[in-house]
Amino acid sequence: MTAGVPANGRLLIDAVALERRIALIEKGRLSRLWIDRGGPARFDLHLGRVTKVLPEMAAAMVALDGLSDGLLPLDRYATPLHEGQWVLVQIARLGFEDKGVKLTGRIAIEGLGMILRPNGKLIEIPRKLKDEDRRTDLARQLKALQVDDDGIMLRSQALDWSEAALAGEYNLLRRHWVAAQAALADPKKPKLISAAQSDVDQMIERHLMAGGACMVDGTSEFVRLRGLLKARGAPDGNLTRYAGSQLLFGASDPDIDLDIDLEDEINNAVASKVDLPGGGWIAIDPTTALCAIDVNAAGADAGRDAETRAIEVNNRAAKEIVHQIRLRNIGGLIVIDPLRVKSRTGRDMFDSTLRKSFGAELDGAVQIGGFTRLGLYEFSRQRSGESLYERMQAKSDVRRLSAQTALNGVIRGVIAQCRSGVVGAMSLYVSPMMAQLLASDVNGTQILQNELGVAPEIIADPTLSEDAYRLEKKI
Image 1 (tube, rainbow, N blue to C red):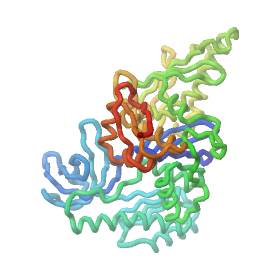
Image 2: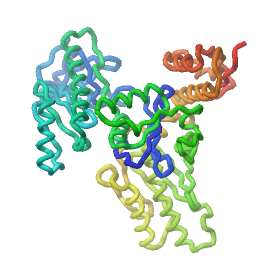
Image 3: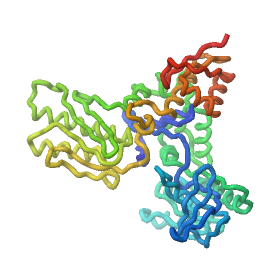
Image 4: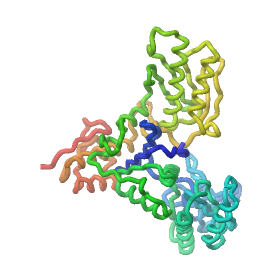
């Protein structure tokens, strides 16, 4: 889940390749990893054109920029629709499998601290704020900002924002709507007016606005985040640019203050076996229908009372299972096979530890089923996008890296060598599949050219695996 980054967590952002990797570090451990490769998001604002009205479905098909036609229900647009009509719409639901995107004409431009509803008129302040003086002051500030009967719904996290931060947020959202109106007044072709903040972007901004520490490897991403803080009138002392000679996630720089190798941690996060501190291990096996987790003692505390040992291993496993589920972003039905214990106390301890470890997620994201008659433990967790395994691995019967993961790995490897002093005219030997990817990916080759100073010669080498490469100086 993307929400709920603790204030004491630290974010490390790797934005040097074609994807962003965002690591949350808590108590010296990798607690969560997000891999963001862009693409359409919910609430993206589009100028579209109605291609067909479907009375039998009470909907219309709308041509969009860069996407298949989307479905716009007729009751989600303020006026009757006809073929050829230009419309301003937002993505209400992303497409999946064989279904296209679903659209809405009820525009709501979401920001970190407020939601702008054009022509919505109302100013809404969260009910949780009981201080009447503060409510009155916020209403006054928002009323002073309001243009053209805009509806403004303030978010809870903005209740203590300064007047400058509120003004900065409103002006940012307002610019998106002004751009949309200008596009509708002079339509030429369907276009993406403004990309909505992804869940990952919202998480990063919440973290920064709360004063959380954040280090960024990548000039463009650092400048973007610093600009957002400046636009909201917020200090940027908690945002740091990494300028080391290594890549951030592979760095041993003392300024980073990390006792773990992040690259190793990421690779381990898609492995099946996870060792438990103190002995024992768990096996995590995600399938289409559910995720099965097996707890194994593996000789831990051999010679001790079997019941006591099982209870202690299960307790350690419960904490690690929750950690791994969050790190890997596992959702859906999850079934655990803990070590068998005879006592009700032992089962209750496992249940209590698991619940305590989930904490606030029990308020809705996690539903506990408990122990079954066969001694298995069941619960479900709300899905939130792809799991880390799905994001990093190719869809195949054999575990292997996805094309995007392999491509970004090669790019990061070359950048690491460049930071060690390798520059100039180079031959880059890669697998045939990678050679094809680089030949068709302008952004990837541009990154390599920027780092080396000149575009490398790409040479296909059938002996190399999908993510392997060799960089040689051209003679």
